[in-house]
Image 1 (tube, rainbow, N blue to C red):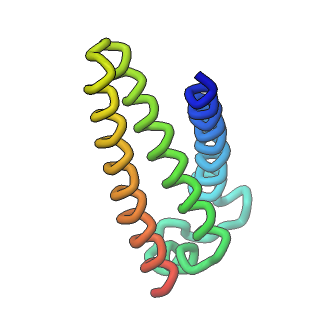
Image 2: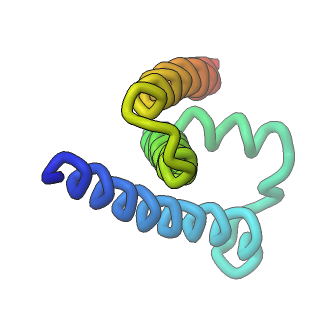
Length: 116
């Protein structure tokens, strides 16, 4: 039971992290004239953002938070169907593996953009 409450707390923390990071994204991408960012959609602007350490951290945190939040939520929805312990364990393992693979692939893309 303690384990589930820790996972649920991480789920909530990931949700808060997503809200904050989407707020950063919204500020940069949609309030560009107010904050003084120039031509945020140009290739050069996207490339230069991807090369900064700040966005490396922001993109990585957003990726990890979104994957965890989404897959943990999906796991709980599946568990609500009441399939039994063995299937729940299999679902948890499949979602964990899928999340790790997705994170590695996404992080690879972030690092490649950073090193361009």
